[in-house]
Image 1 (tube, protein in one colour):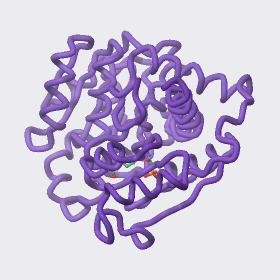
Image 2: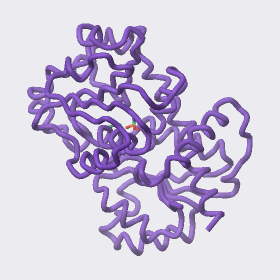
Image 3: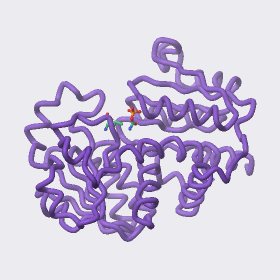
Length: 305
Ligand code: CP
Ligand code: NVA
């Protein structure tokens, strides 16, 4: 039973389904408990954020807890003192740590040495809260969270890697449309394929990836920390823009998703973002509900150990 939520695969299939159901109960008002009453959560941010920051803060408050917003300036994690020592000290003050940073291995180290649960709010490698929230949104809109074709178009990044991790737990037809120079993490791709749960394909032709898709998903071409590569990436990914022409190849009832923030006119057009297939703001809302459920699930796990 996992103490931390650093990657989707930290949760078993049953834990993922329980968490999705819990999020639905929280969203519908059926779940009214305050499992974080009296608890402080340290929310560490080394990158910008709208959705993650506000939805975690609001969610912690709604569960009865208090959140502390900590930037690089305050604790200089790993610089002023070791991650080990910071993890030990933080664990004496707070009941949970949420962190958004660059290095995934820093987060693994923090989790290893912290005595309290650690939640990954995005690293260069993965963005698990995002994709679990997204599959909740898919479930609401399409009535199921498996046996669907998900076409991810664009840069092979932390969001793509998290779709791959999800496909190791839920049966999906995951088609990744990207260029040979912007592939997702090779290790995560290999492990997802080896899990043998889903059909996983990488396509250099966007039309092939999108053909017959139930969901077309995209993200920025240059992630945080890579903005200096924006033009270079754009040159490679131009053909993977989600626009009306490409969307015609998907299922008629296709849902379009984007984790946001979007660079409108680059990876997605205004027409598609604001069009009838777009569910991007439902996605953003569900970050709140899923993260409340993830934190509650981790506290339940901790109580059992
Ligand atoms: N989707 C997402 O994580 O948004 P923020 O970067 O604004 O938190
Ligand atoms: N891939 C993007 C996701 C932002 C939520 C990034 O890492 O910047």
